[in-house]
Length: 319
Image: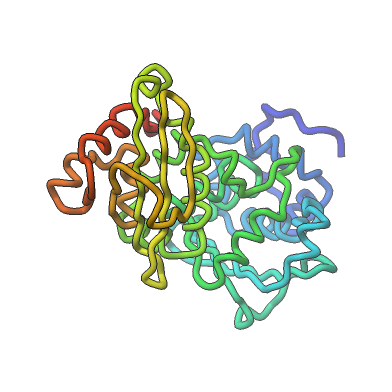
C-alpha cells in the first residue's frame, strides 16, 4: 500500500468497510502509516472510532498481532510470560487480549487464566501508547494504566518494543521529561501513588530521581552553599527503607546510595515514598510537610532548608 498522507482523516478511510475489509486494512497498511494516521486524528475523532466494535476489533487485533515486528530481538529473547491487556471501552465494557511472550516470539492466546500480569487501560490510551504518542510509564504514574500481578513482567513488556517509526522503546524512564512526571504525579491519587511506591516501579523511580538530582539544583544558588542531606524513604512493600545521601559543595553535587551510619551528614529527611515523590515534584511544600508530620527532619534544619532553597523542582506541564 502506498504511503498514507498524514493529514488524511482516519474515519473517512474506515467508513463503510466490512469486518473483513477492516481486517485487511490493518494487515496491509504498514505500522508507520497507521501511526501517522492516528497521530493526525484528535481524541474527539478517535474516541467514536474506538467505540465502533468493528473498527475497534480490527484495530486492536491488528496492533497486537504485529507487536513482534517491533520487538528488540535481544530483549525479547530474555522475556518469558503471559500478559493480559484489559481494555476499557468508554467505561461501558472491558475487552481482554492475551499474549504469550517467549524467546521464539509473541503469540496471542485464547485462555486468560494463564496470565501472570494484567495491564489495564482505556482503549484510547492503549492506542496512543502503542503508537508512541504517550508514554506507558507516565500513564502508570498518573493512574490511567494499572498493573496487577508481575510488575517486572509488565515492565519487560514495555521495554521490549520499539515504537513504530522510531528506535525508542515504549517504556523508557530515562527519557521522561521531569515536567511530564510532575504532571502525572499531580493527576494521581495518593492511594495509587502508594501502590506505585510499594511495587516494582519504586526502584526505577528512586533511581531516576537521584540520578537526575544535580539537574534540580540552581547553579547560581548552589554555588554558595555546602550541605549534606540524607533521605530516609519508607513505604517499601517489605517494610524496609531506602537511604540516599546528597552532598552539595559550592555547586558540585554527588549522590551516594546506602550510606553507612558513619557517613557525615548535616540533616536527614524522613518520609514515605509517596510524600518523597510529591516533595521532589513540587506537590508537597516541605514546611507544610513538617507541620503536618509527614516529613521529619533529623539534625540541622537550617542545612536541610538550604538544600531545599537551591532546588528548582519540575513543574506540571501546562496543558
